[in-house]
Image (cartoon, rainbow, N blue to C red; front, top):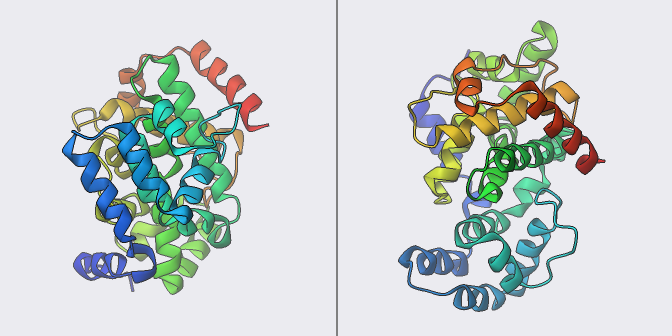
Length: 274
């Protein structure tokens, strides 16, 4: 029987101590950033006090989805290139980087799909002239984090979801709804709210499969929506099913791209992922 009690589901997701144990220094850093009165140098100095966190932040910055040709070796350099909001999100994400690293453990190929979506989102955002394309890229990287949380938190239901996808050849999100009564974007949103992700990064993750043009940050959501579809169409990684979701016509209209634009982005994506 599907698990339909959303309050129970959410409590279980939010109660995962392994995932939600955020180091004290991360709370201190995010509080400093939220004041808006500290400098990049002050933030970099605070992060650098924790060698483990520093190593994880630099690992994530250099993981490939930002496309830097030269390695970023200091927190100060990352701050200059990426800005406060991106670094804040990276700090929170890096503090639980084991979850990101565990993607392929729970679903082989999910990391590659997530990385491809991040790179595709950045390329689309740049072509559209959007501000802070790195922020959009990070939303792309984390857009399927809910799938990992479902696999970790509800292993029996995950097995049912996997079997439903195999038997029905449906989208994983459809099987999630049938088995759990909630889907991975919503589960991801529950967790990421706990991480205090800014709404401009959270909304594209939460609604990439349920686009509406009147939601806040709809343009960013449309970019992640399209990047996810392009990666599926190109067979980059494994999102958990073999289907390609329909492109939301409102998202396509909002972006105002031509097919020539999309073709160029796909060529760039091929080159970068290679």
